[in-house]
Amino acid sequence: AQGAQDPLIEAPNDALQDQSSQYYGIDPSEETVIRSSFVAETAIALRSTEANARDRLFIAEGLRHLCPETLEELSRGEITTRTAQEIVKQSQDLDPEDVQHMQQTLLPIARTATDSAVAHRARKIHERLHPRPIEERHKKSAEDRKVSYWNEPNGMSVIQLYMPAENTLSIINTVNWHAAQHNDPDDERTEQQ
Image 1 (cartoon, helix red, strand yellow):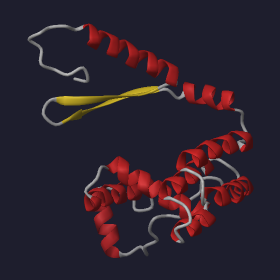
Image 2 (cartoon, one colour):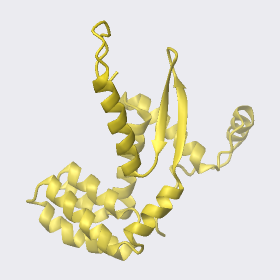
Image 3 (cartoon, rainbow, N blue to C red):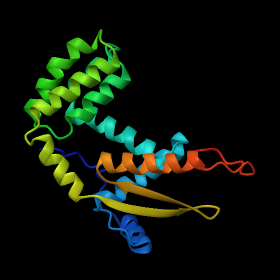
C-alpha cells in the first residue's frame, strides 16, 4: 500500500505491559505514541534533535520498505547517502511501479553523476509520474497552512509557519529589510538576531 509501513515493534500483550499502560495512560497499540517515544529515545542515543532522528528514521524506513534496490546500491557503496536520501524522498507518494521505474532510471546514472544532478532528475521524474498535477497538490497544501508556536527554555519561544513558499519568502524579505534599516550604533545585535 502506498505510504504503508510496518509497525516499529510487535510485542505480545502481557501483564507488565497492561500495568504500564494503565499507569502512564498510554495505549500500546497506538502507533503514533510508540513512534514518538522511539524517535525521542533515538535522538537521545544519537545526541541529536528529534527532527534529525525522525528524518533518519524516515529515510531508513523508505530504503527498507519502499526502495530496496536503492538500499542495495548504497550498501555496496555504488551511490552516495545523499543520492539515496533524494531517491527515497521523491518516491514517497508514488505508486510502487512508479518507484520501481524511478529506481531503474536513476540508479545507473547515480553511480557516476553528482548528487545534485541525481536530485534534479529525481524531481523531474517525480513530477512526471505523480498522479496529481503540481498545481492541484500546491492548492491542497495551501489549504493545510497553519501557524504554530511552542515555548522554549529561558523565556524564549518558536513560531513555525506552514504556508506557500511565496508567502514565506515575502515575510523573510520584509523582516530582513527592516533589520537592515535598523542603524542604532548602541545595538550590538546581529542582523539575524
